Amino acid sequence: MSGSTVYMFHGYTSFAADHWFPWLETQVEENLGIPFKKLNFPDSYHPTVSAWNNYCDQTIKSQDGITLVGHSLGCIQVLHYLEAHDIHHINVLLVSGFDEPIWTIPELDGFTEHPVDYSNVLPKIRKVTVISAMDDPSVPYQYILTMARHLHAKYVLVPHGHHFTDLGDDKTLPIAFEELAKLVE
Image 1 (tube, rainbow, N blue to C red):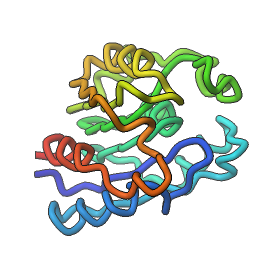
Image 2 (image 1 turned 180 degrees about the horizontal axis):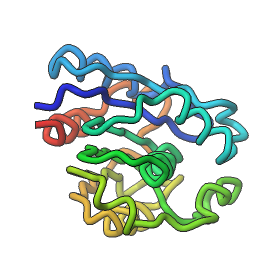
Image 3 (image 1 turned 60 degrees about the vertical axis):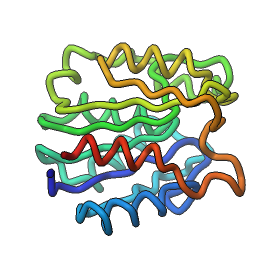
């Protein structure tokens, strides 16, 4: 099992302490014995590519064997980080993400202005899994499936879950822990 750090990339209008992120941190640290660091990106209500890239550069210890977990906008940020750093054997878990402009949230188009260079990203990945819900109103699952195909990823589609951020019903996400545990074996 990998002992390197897991980094959690939250999404648009979210913070490190939101949703299922603290629960996943507890599960990973207590059950897998792996350090888990929740990132807290600047101004998640008005995110900019440059600010989020700079934050990653200053916060993440860029090394081989780390695990990157992204949710929503955090998924494309994971891919930006992979593109920009000479790291290898990276485990990646992406939940409700996208890698192209989405009609539901046009204010995030800046993050997809430059297409991901998958010829650069794919050789850096050890294992990758993508999770989405069929009833996601924020990022329709077809976008998430496209990203999974670009990554040659294992794709897990659940029938219900929305964007995995429903108030009061988003404090745990067992499928994320199950898949993350498989990634770091």
